[in-house]
Structure formats: structure tokens, C-alpha cells
Image (cartoon, rainbow, N blue to C red):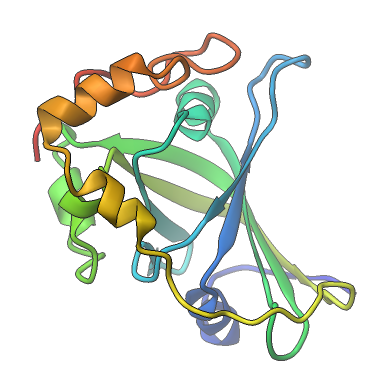
Length: 193
């Protein structure tokens, strides 16, 4: 049976911080808009800021659906599931906000990710999520899968870019500045660090 929690602490915090992978889900307000579900990884790119607030780094990619949906309505769900050890699924339902490079809070938030070189991954924003509901469930049907390690492809690809070339790369992508549903996405050009 699922259980609700008032805060992210203790066993719950330990569980989500230990997972090498989590998923984000967002959607536009439009009933016929595109629901987005994204995997997030890279050790050190997720942080629990306090008992109700988490953040993760938003890196270069081929679209910006999460950013666009959060800018429109703020709704987001994060999900972690145990692929190793005891079965468990944790979902954090809340309100999210993309904090862009030109935001005065950006530098302070970036300090929560000391093991990540933001220049290697084309860091676009920091997503901050405030929990409204935190629940876990059994995860009995989630398969056992092994974690073999991090991929280095993302860092190899985007470490070659500076702010100007990264902005040019994003400008060529159809769904970075504007979402699949036409919502404002990532503001371009990128502000420097």
C-alpha cells in the first residue's frame, strides 16, 4: 500500500539520493497538449535542498518541453524506482520552476552540485521543485536491473561548446525556444555563467 509523507527526510531522502536515475513528467494546460516524460541521470546532478524542495540540473538536449511546461503552469512529478535492492517507487508531485543562468539565484543554487562541471554538459537551467505531495508504493513489478555506470557521451559532446556555439546549436533545434505545442521554451541566446 502506498503511503504519503509530509517531508523528504530520513529513509525517503536516502532512497531518492541513492538512485542513479529518475523521471520527470510535465504537461501543458491544454487538454490536447503533449505530455512529456523524461529520464534524468548523471550522478551529482540532483540535490535535496530542504525537507520540501529538490533541484536538478537541466542540461543540453534536443528539446525543452519540461522548461516550457513549467513556465506555463509549474506542474511536475518526479519519480524514482528501485531497480536494485528492496522494491520501492517514490513520486514527488509538486510545483517546479526553471531558474535560468541570468537569475540572481542561479549561482547559489549551482553550489549544491559541486561534483558537476556545468561547462561539460551545456547547462541550461536549474529546475527547482517544491513538493506538494510525496508518496511511495511497493514497486513489486519493477524488474531488477544492474547499474553499470555513467555514460560519458553527453559530456564529450557538449564540452566542445561555449555559450555562443551552444546558443547557435539550440537556435537550430525546432523545439528548444518553443515547445512541441508552441509554448515559450528556453530563452535564447543563453546568458553567460
